[in-house]
Length: 246
Image (cartoon, rainbow, N blue to C red; front, side, top):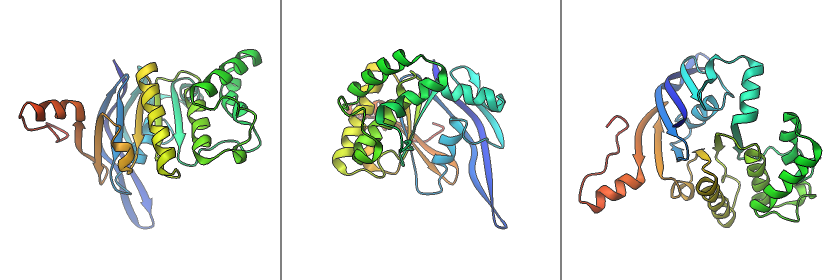
C-alpha cells in the first residue's frame, strides 16, 4: 500500500518580475515503510515537494493522496486534522517551544488531539526512552544539545503514530556524531515501527542511509534510484536503472 501518491504536481512562485518553477509535473508514489531521500541543489524543488506532501503548501495543480485521503481537496480544518493524525514533521530548526520542557513539547501534540493527561505523560515518557532521552524530559530546549533537541523533535513527530514522517534537512545543524545518531534513530524507527520516511537533504551522510534516492533539478525528478535493487543488479552484472521513467 502507498503511504503517499503525488500526481502531476506543478507549483510556481513570483519573484519580482520573474516566475520561478518549484515543481514541474512531479509524479511520485512512496510505499508504506519506505525510507526515501529527496536530493538536489538549492532551488531544485525538494523542499517545495516536501511541503506539498505535508499540506504546508498548495500546488497550483495536481493531486496528492496521503493514507488514502486527497490532501489537495481538504479544507483548512480538515487539512489541519489530517496533519495532526497522519503526518509527523521534523525540521532543521527543531521548532520546539522554548518555554516548554522536552516532555511538554512532545505532549503538546497529544493535548491538541484531546488525549488525557495521564495517557499523555505515559506516552511521552515512553517515547523519550525510545529516542534515548530517558531522564531528560523536564529539561527545556536551551538545556539540551542540538542533537538532543532534534531527538525531541523526532519524538514529537512520531508520538501520534503517523502514516508518514517528513524531514527537511534534519542534519543541517548537527555535527557528524549527532547526525549519525539521528539517522541511526530514523533507521531504527523505520525498521521496528514501519514508519515511512521522506527526507529532503543535500547531506551525503543522510543519503548513505536511504534505500531509495530521488534526485531533483529545476522542479523535476531526474532520477529515482532503488539502491537495493541497483546493488542486486550490480552483483548480477546488470546495468542499474537510474532514470526516473525507466
